[in-house]
Length: 268
Picture 1 (cartoon, rainbow, N blue to C red):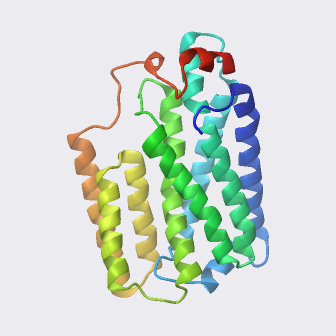
Picture 2: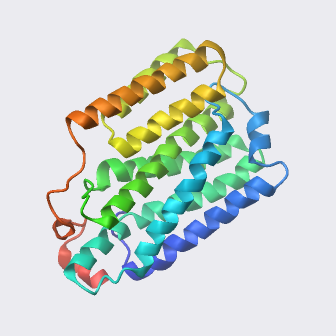
């Protein structure tokens, strides 16, 4: 999926998908019942504190606007360096647009309390974003503004997607149930393994997810989630301190897109 569209297409596709998703989220907040009403009526062992989702949403939208502005205003034909900068962002646009459309559609089913249908959309988005950051995205080059912004947007998108997946899945299939021993063990192992393979950005999102879940739960399960959040933070911090994840030794010109350079230049 990466780098299958031109810069011209990316410049209308990405902003359009953002506007559609933002309109859907606004509808979800203002409608009756609204997003929080549906949340409060459907609780389970992965229900987070809803304010944490809102607190994540606002700055993430601003971050997306900064990324979109650069995508739409950078002239890819001005220089070879600019072409490389543009390609870094264009590669992510299909995944970005897919995610926005999925989450916009998810809102329709969520506010109608069709939670199993909404979970299908959440699943598509979450695994698409995870696939991009794991299998498609090159390491961050800290000398490239496009690289830094794309890593921030893609990994925060994937990070909140993990929370959405756990939340929606638990209430769609396990409404009003408590966390079993298997759920507790798998949560600790899963987040621990993910933290061990994450950089500061995605790892920070995982810690945030666990804190949101811990605050949203009560009793021993909430306390255990808090311990998981602490453990995840330690793992992410130690791993990335010992082995820094970002490349600052080369400039943006060394970026290699999915397709060959000649084809990419023709698309730009």
